[in-house]
Amino acid sequence: MARPADWDILDLDGDPTPGDPARVRQLASRFHDFAETAHRAKVAVDSLQGDGAVLTWVGL
Image: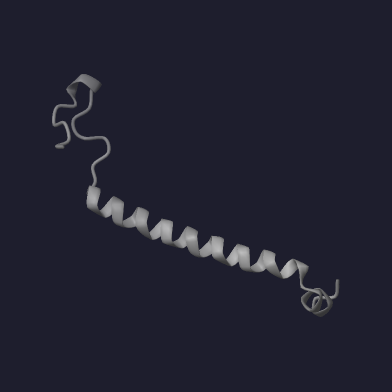
């Protein structure tokens, strides 16, 4: 679907949010991948909380 070209109704000279939809999707994919990696790291760290050897090693 093409973006509207006539922004006069909003008193604008041009598209207020120009951009490349494919590039936005690519960036969103990178952020999603990063979020999944961060979540896996959190789950791994959380799983160490019940490990007695780890708790002893950190002094708890």
